[in-house]
Length: 367
Image (cartoon, one colour):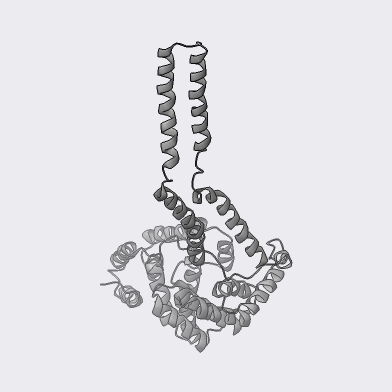
């Protein structure tokens, strides 16, 4: 507070020093001394005439000029100072002296931080260092949130880190606080549901399922919530419901969605041969691939299956796998084309055609 007072005094002194001259009237000229000089000059002209140093005509001209200057000096001494000019300058000085601080304070109060507490040097030294271990950084953020429990942004940053560290109970608390102090959203609800499932050892409990349903109510396209709702259906023994949820996700997803391989694997788990069967080694290798390579591998396997069925069209299970694979990849047109080719291939075998039609009932394709 003392520092601010000193700054205020310095500012006032600077303004006063600059504007003080504006408040003062001009000092009057020394008109009396000037008139005395002209009178002396008239006397000197008379002396020069008496001494015959100048002629009478030159003396007359000099007297006229000196008399004119004497009259001007006398008139100027009688004129009062311009009161309006002095008043204006004093008003400008007062306005600047008072108005500038007022305007500065008016801008500072809404834009500045007048209530911000002091930040001592000791606190600055304890500012989180990005090079510190993650546990130390988390401890510092937790200490900050203990003193500032309504810092929604802090809870929002801390929650996913706690989940990553396996501290699911703490992550649940952090996500709840983030929702309370930063506002509700589909993403935060889905993250909270995931943390609850993690705290339950990977089981989608009724509590976590309720959070996923809240997320879907806010945003029907929330990917994480949709996936875990499918997982909840699978854990409850409703494989068909889980498959339906995941197929709907894949149908709306772009081909380059990074989570597509995860949902493909889950769909294959509950729906049998939903897509080309991948061995454990292939799945493990796919997890280590980048997004482009994974998509290329899956498309390659589908193309090889389609090529084999052109040579052996009696494989009903192969046709079902191909149609389902195209559906999973989101390519509905190719799925319909494969369905048409499959029916043509087994058209002469009533039993195979029946098996094919039975297998296609759950895919949602017309005809």
